Image: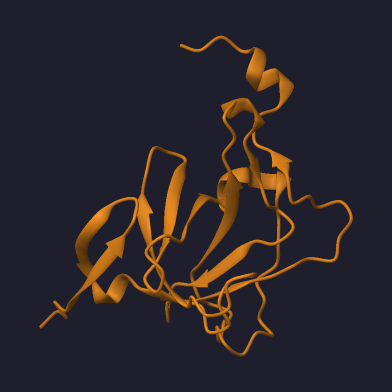
Length: 152
């Protein structure tokens, strides 16, 4: 018999709604700058963007993109050593990049220096900061070529 438990989400952006309890992602140490907000859910948005909505603070939500969508431009290793997430070799995982949306959409950036890893087996996540000068906290999501291409 499937677990049909739900939780009520209160969000300043999206109002109040229910989601399956099984969709909650726990960040045992919180996110960078938000150590006390530890429970989140993913909300679909206009592709390629999603919202990572805090369950602990209704006004806190991050715009994120799937780091896997960046292909070879972004290859980060799973933090197997993190005891909170308990990653195993065969675990499925997600890499989320926090996005800063600007008034001019072509200036929208992603933080590739501090990605968020989510272990899909236990729904636990961790944000990792890479000490790599080639990674940027404001990686442009639009290259000059993409900006110049006509929209179809």
